[in-house]
Image (cartoon, rainbow, N blue to C red; front, top):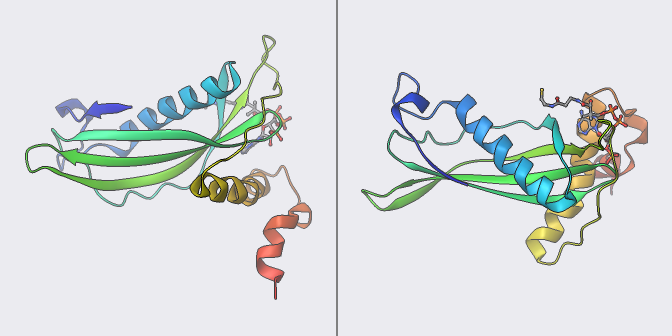
Length: 159
Ligand SMILES: CC(C)(COP(=O)(O)OP(=O)(O)OC[C@H]1O[C@@H](n2cnc3c(N)ncnc32)[C@H](O)[C@@H]1OP(=O)(O)O)[C@@H](O)C(=O)NCCC(=O)NCCS
């Protein structure tokens, strides 16, 4: 997704508002998830987002969203965001994030999604890490006991 930062998108410092960016990210990520599962999706959770660099008025925002792993009814989407200053011809990183979506059936109940197979080294790394990130989310959301997060625990117990 590509957007241009217009005056109504900015804060008092002339930079893109975080809330507007998160809205665009939600849309881009939802489209990626829907393309993967061919079904309507809802946002289940959004991981921590740190804004590394402000995106200035008049600059362009690029958002790249890819499904990093599909589970049973949910999908993790990895997003990369960067700004581009056409006038001075440079690009700069804004942030990265993970959004989780759940596919719903016509009755609004979670429905299974197709699995996915990572191909590149980068995709494999994201795929592998997705299991641990999912466990963090479910623990924080009160849907998993820390004791059941085997892969996450292994990070702290490996020799
Ligand atoms: C997300 C939602 C569909 C989950 O429904 P649920 O009845 O709690 O379903 P379940 O507990 O069976 O979980 C369904 C899936 O959601 C995932 N999930 C639930 N809570 C989650 C969370 N906090 N973070 C990440 N994934 C979560 C589960 O892991 C499961 O995925 P899986 O099948 O791949 O393992 C439901 O809570 C919902 O509709 N929330 C509102 C969504 C919404 O309106 N979003 C817009 C923002 S307001």
